[in-house]
Length: 186
Ligand SMILES: [Zn+2]
Image 1 (cartoon, rainbow, N blue to C red):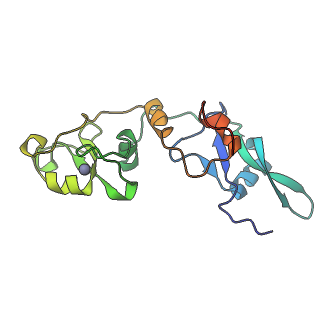
Image 2 (tube, protein in one colour; image 1 turned 45 degrees about the horizontal axis):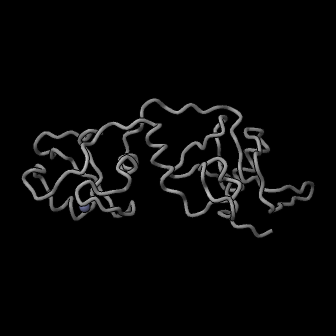
């Protein structure tokens, strides 16, 4: 059988039927999903029409699985570059334009050279151009304007923001678990 490893991914839900994450959306390759089914770690919630056959069994690939054991979300959001980008909706906080992750960097609102710390409330998403332009200056010493004062987001908030960025691939069986008002036609 020739099924590429990145076709037919399975949406992974927590035991409460909420996706583990929205952005990036929590998915597994069909191989990992099947493995989890055989290890009885997940319930199959929905299936693709795609069949896989082994000498002894024939079964449909899972399109949605839910974990049998609930994975609690941590109280504190990890302070990572990615989560800073997500908090700021992939938008430069100076020119307020959207960029792809690879074109974004981060900026210390109070520069490190002036004692600014690398913390949630002093770091913002920035495009490379604004970042270079601002350099080691305070915002009010430049023509730039800070869009929004940085802050510590919570998990709920980041999940909600993640919902705003649907992935490229959405199987119709996923919609019920992702977006209340999504289009149900494939
Ligand atoms: Zn910018």
